[in-house]
Amino acid sequence: MGNLAKDLQSAENLSNSRTRICSIGKMLVSLDKEDREALTKVLADPLIESSAIARVLDKNGISIGGDLIRRHRRRANGNGCMCPKDL
Ligand SMILES: [Zn+2]
Image 1 (cartoon, rainbow, N blue to C red):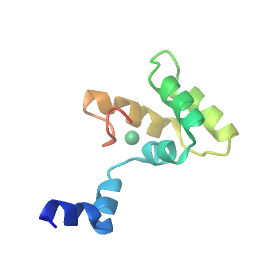
Image 2 (image 1 turned 60 degrees about the vertical axis):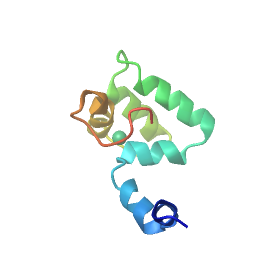
Image 3 (image 1 turned 45 degrees about the horizontal axis):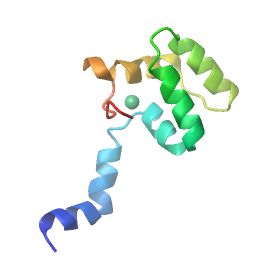
């Protein structure tokens, strides 16, 4: 087995990289496909306020503030979170 395969199989290496994903990213990957697609769609829509998304999430038992949502949305500009741009 090569070094790459060993590293990829090491849970420690992969869990370290997960810390670079913000609360929104973690929440997104925990949702089922339908919810994730719907949320990804509104996050990508610049006409929808982050605070409005936060209110809907809160109503559904997901407590994440508008500031975190704004930071996640800014990642495409290079001044937001570290989540992959296509998350
Ligand atoms: Zn993020």
